[in-house]
Image (cartoon, rainbow, N blue to C red; front, side, top):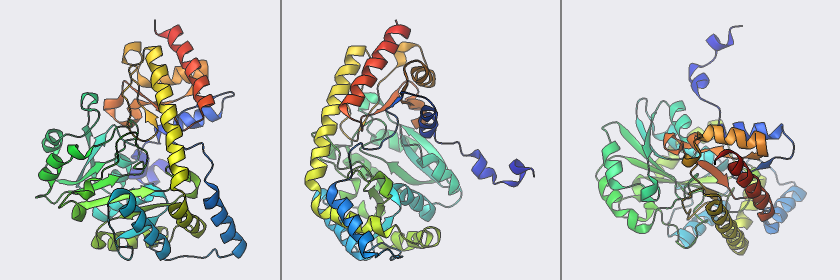
Length: 389
């Protein structure tokens, strides 16, 4: 059979994730230290695991409501209002999803008609562009700049808007840069958007992870809640990556349509994960704070080490990534990463994976132990000393 001729052209045009490419290559090698995947090295807190064990012992593992357990949606609503001043009705403004990624996909498929343009602030996580394309939309990169601390400015946004603009994607705290948007950064952007029909997809999966500045959502501002879809989840904050649980918060008419897509594609998120997540929201704030303190310690350690290596690095204020510049090495980010992996067995991700504006950078995840990071830094320093004189 002629598979290329018979398979979907759209599927064939989507490139594989460049993050997974380096991770998969590292899996074939011995003694590799990987700083490439954003997966917390902490164990899921015990109360969460205990709730899952109890669910298994009771054998209460059934299909659940399409929107997610009402009890969980109530806890999510309480959490969002308590931590981030975002009130949502659990009955019709929240949808529990299989990870934050499904929520992003649902948002695009709910809002996009063929040809609609979606502005994606870059550098950005790798899923947005492909998911927009698969929804028949047109991804439009919107480059942010290090001199603006990778924050979106109203001037940059205004220059990018066209009559076809349907959605603006904001992902702060940002993967891969660790940048944040402060409360004072939003008013001009809000003023620009409030009289338009442009929606905002605000991916806030790292919102609990900030260092010195409390997270602020664009949905908090007058006139923005009605046009904003907030995406969040349990993977990063609660060290629950493999539990695959997230949520979407949005006006009821959007949730109503997204639920139908979710209903036919997924039906419901895993019930074991949902019951465990109730406990996460109820009793694990102290565990989360402890993990964030440790991330901050790792962040400061790597910033210091990069300075010693002569690698300029933006001082991330959120998430658990750093985005050092390798422009002075004379190598592209892809060449640097490939050679670092082959010569020193350290796996990191080229900045170009997150948009053209990241071509001179690397993404380093510090969601790993300090021992792990220390050895990786020794190997990177040795690689730079050998190859970048």
